[in-house]
Length: 116
Image (cartoon, rainbow, N blue to C red; front, top):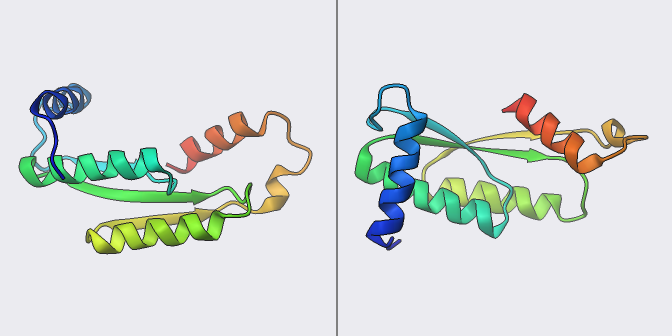
């Protein structure tokens, strides 16, 4: 994947600001992967930067069981991880958890943060 140097440097600088040692070498990043375009793109960028800067990437897919295409999304995440030799953690949230919940999107985000 080709990255514009300006974009690559901005992302790299942001990552550096998040690390305690101010270096990326030997750092580990866990990326929440949904199977959507945004998370696949982010993961692709991180993969490119990881190869150039010697840091490790793992992926995590959380199946909230909130839409009918969850199995397709999980399969896409598994394929992406396999094709790029990345470790993928998966977690399924039982549909029962969502019964009688309000503001499901916020609850899903909270649950995802707890699991990550």
